[in-house]
Image (cartoon, rainbow, N blue to C red; front, side, top):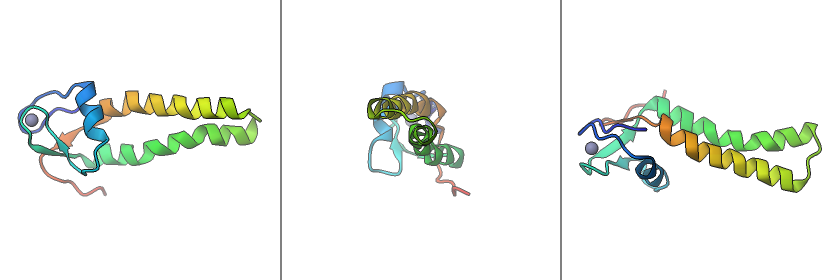
Length: 99
Ligand SMILES: [Zn+2]
């Protein structure tokens, strides 16, 4: 879970999830209201994660799954992503270049 670089507040799971799904590139600390930027490592992980949703589709190529299993697999990946990714987020005060 991210820890605010400004006030050292450890974000709760719910606060992190809410901040993840805004259109802003920054995340606002729920404690001190300071804008926080994702670290470049966090952004790289975040850019890679959505590709996990393709795994059930890839498996479908090799094992003929019915559409219900396929949709269920994609939903499962989406749920796991939302449970895991907020725990991997780190934030800083300064914006870092991604590479
Ligand atoms: Zn803060």
